[in-house]
Amino acid sequence: MTAENLLVTMRDGLLEVEINRPEKRNALSRSVLAELQTIFRDHADIGALRLAVLKGAGDRSFAAGGDLADLASVKGADAAETMAREAKEALAAIRGFPVPVVAGLNGDALGGGAELAMACDMRVSANHARIGFIQGRLAISSAWGGGVDLMRLAGPALGLRLLTRSELVPAAEAQGMGLIDAVAEDGQSLDEAIAGFIAPMQKQAPQVMRAFKALAIELRCNGRQVLDDIETRHFGQVWAHPDHDQAVAQLLNRKR
Image (cartoon, rainbow, N blue to C red; front, side, top):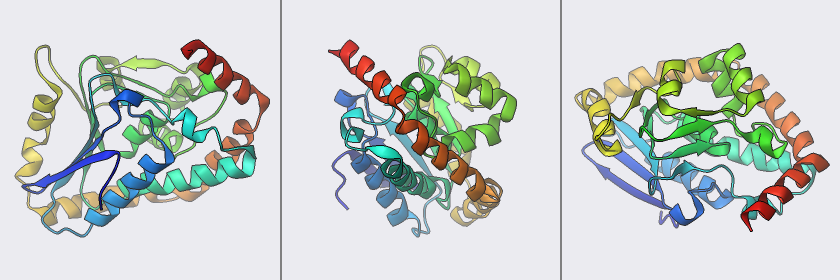
């Protein structure tokens, strides 16, 4: 597959995927999500793979949430639920990828970008990056399974705090919360930090990595459907509320 919005390479058992929209802060349009789904599904059966790394282009944003220009055509609760389910399928291809997926947070992971980061198994961050479930600032809720991932990883108390306060959490603080596994040291590039983090994984046999990931997939997905349905239903309702339209209009006016 030729991916318009992604750069994809594979070498020595490592699949590297980069969202290549730096001029859009790597915002997640529906076409980007569809490409991510296809790439991860198309590579799932390659037996030589040990792991995958997903990051964004540039140094500002891993992914700055959903692409507002692309999503402007999504009107009403039913259309919003359909969009959310399709995006959930894209991120499910990452959660269910048969070997570990490491997110390289080259910059901020915001809103839907935070949900994408949480869909990965582990996260390595540049020291200037932040992660933020800031959906509430647009009068919407999580939509793509990230709320479920956050609650399961951080627990309901911390997860609810991060969602309801729309906090932007610096990398070092996020590491203390367990949301990020490693942070680049001063003077260390993100690529160097990722290389150091994944070095032990690259020594493992591919079939062993698949065996480990199979356990994680079962634990992450067991009983998940009920939570995903709750998230999707509420997202459709808040997306269709006038408060969301007003919040988007205010944001776009500020940008102009």
